[in-house]
Length: 237
Image 1 (spheres, helix red, strand yellow):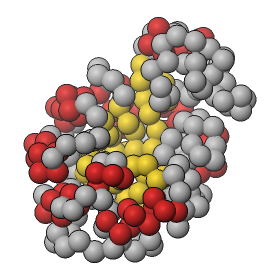
Image 2 (spheres, helix red, strand yellow):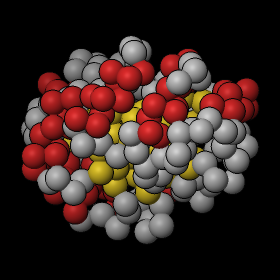
Image 3 (tube, helix red, strand yellow):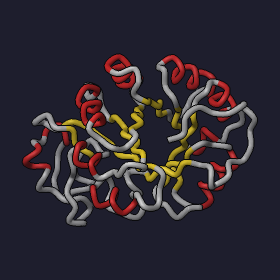
Image 4 (cartoon, one colour):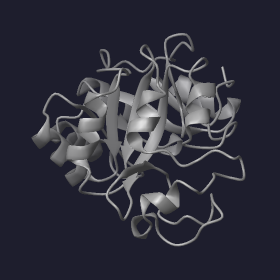
């Protein structure tokens, strides 16, 4: 996945040079965050992005939402469900099961990177242990600065990126730098504001922007000079 930026000049990214990251393993095309989605997306992307949280029996599971009801026939919080219950649920009536993090990482082949988004605190040790067993290059990202700090404290060599939603570009870049991140992940509307990409690149941060839903979004991000595009589909370029 993309490392630090360039010399700070704002230039359009060539589509051949940008890192294409399948959001939730291309949620616009496949049942999100499943092993099947990963396997179907990886021939077309440079990296897949997946979400991780902990269930009641302690396993790390790959699931975006805090609640089960949008994506499965189940209900309640993931954190309150045992793994034996979760493993019987299927995602979006696809017949595909919710995977554990280690299962999802095993589905990512060598040569394809994976962006593991940490959805809650207290996952650092187990997430790093799972990443250590994976063949893929792993980048951890989170909206939670203290979750990134815990990853840093446990393994300073683990690549990390700060997810952001809004705010002053200089302050956000400073926060990512203070955490020792290699990247920053802003939304489309923020990254296209003047000065954001330049500030990140001057600080040596890669900029991977979320979430491109269509070709227009992708073109806007290329024009902004990003290093990576986090997209719901792989057929945007």
